[in-house]
Structure formats: C-alpha cells, structure tokens
Amino acid sequence: MQIAFASDYGLDDEFVGVCKAVVLGLAPGTPILDLGHGIPPHDVRAGSLLLVRAVQYLPDETIVLAVVDPGVGTDRRLVAVDVEGGVLLGPDNGLLAPATAMIGGPRRVVALENPEYRLAAPGPTFAGRDVLAPAAGHLAAGVPLEALGPEIDPAGLVPGVVSLPDAEPSGAIAGEVWWVDRFGNCQLNVDPEALLLAGTRPGGHVELRLSDGARSARWVHTYADAKPSELVVLVDSYGLLALAYDRESAAAALGVRAGSPVTVVPEGVEAGPTRIPVRPSDGTPA
Image (cartoon, rainbow, N blue to C red):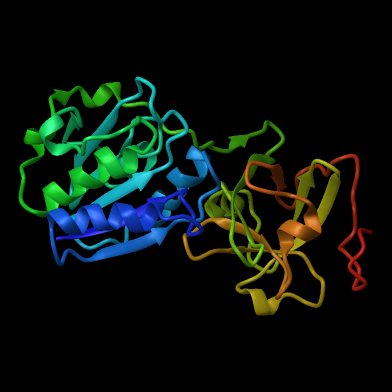
C-alpha cells in the first residue's frame, strides 16, 4: 500500500514534511508519492482538477491524502471515501468529488471523527497534520476504514466545483480554461469530439472568442507543428483541447488563466463580431 499526497502547502514551510513524518511514524516504510504541492492557496477547484488528472494513473491500494482546506477549523467535515482501488482522504468541500466520480463513485464514506486516530492538537488550523495524515498512516498500517469514524451517506458529499462546457444554439462551444501548466499551455474543458461532430478536422481552423476579442487557431497534432508565433489548438495528454504556442506561453500571450472563459467556434459557424489576427512575431498583440 502507498500514499499519494497533494496539497496547497507549497514547499517553503515545514507543512509537507511534517505530514509525511506523521504518516511514517504510524506506518514506517510506507511509500509516499508527491502528486504536487503547488496548488494555488485555497483553490479547491485547481486541487480537484489535479486529482482528476492523477488518480487514473495511481496503482491499486493507494491512499490519496489531499489537503486544500480554506474552511480549516470550521464545522466542515473531513472524510475518507472508499473507492475502487483505494481511499481518498480530504475535506468535504468538493475537492474529492470529481476524482471520486471518475473512478466509479464512492462505495463507502466515513467522517474522520474518532479521536483515537487523531493527534492531540494545540489549535484547529492544521488538520492535514492532526487528522488527515494520521488517518492515512493508520489506514496504511492496517486499521479498518470503519474505525476512523461513523459511516455517512455518500449522497451528502459536497459536489465538485469544476465547470462543464455549454453548446450554444449557433454551434459554438462556450467553455473555459481548466488548467494552465508550467509551460503556459491552456487546457480547456472542451472535448475534441465536439469539434469533430461539428465538422472540424485536424488541420482546420477554429475561432477562439476571448474576453478581449477573437483569434484564429489551427488544429495541429503537437506543439512543434505550430509555425513561429502561431496560436494552435491540439489534443493534450488528457484528451482535452488545449491552446498553445510552440515553446511560448499561451497563457501569457492571450492574457488568460484558469477559469477564463473561452468560446470555441468550429469552422462554418458564424464568426464573432471582433476578430484579432494571429499574434505577430514581435510578441505584441495584433
């Protein structure tokens, strides 16, 4: 059994290391995989998307320890969600819901309320150390899930906060940027199948309506297919449409971030009222 750890703690403080120390004190030798600790502070949406991207690749019998908890110290619940292949631990604030749904839904859910499996805490503001890491360590050491607290109705879990695209009557697809990776590529919440159904094929063009106007982008296979300073769309490694430049940041060039609205207009659909040509090579907006 192994633990996969994701948080918004960052690596500047001792928080990640302390949580790992708590786990290893209870279950020595347990492998701990860092999924990422650079989630923006308090950004439940970003954390839930990280989990969605990652859980499908985790081995069976993995305990996911996830901490993005802006409501720490309040009456929000901390839960363990039994799913096919493992257990997800975290606050019940929507963080776990999308990943839970992706891997088949919850089989059982317990609230982490048994004080026997918590650390004594001088204050209520470090639940990752005092509640979630001990739960992960005890589970890895063989404690049964039901010992951690009372079973609760899975239907009562807080739903996820990720958005889905909307199909407009014109045939355009109103979506948004789900994720910006460290290279500046912008993953959209748009399935490429929607473009195929609209008659657009790889090699064709789409219009991208952004908050400051519209741009044209060519559908390519990979980043290197883009011409210098050409905006392209492609299918990313998770099977969704992404906006990109070759070895440049699309997020910086387009002035977008996670959550920014983007409407994708397939070929043949009436164009928007404003069109901004492809960005010229000097890097300034056209």
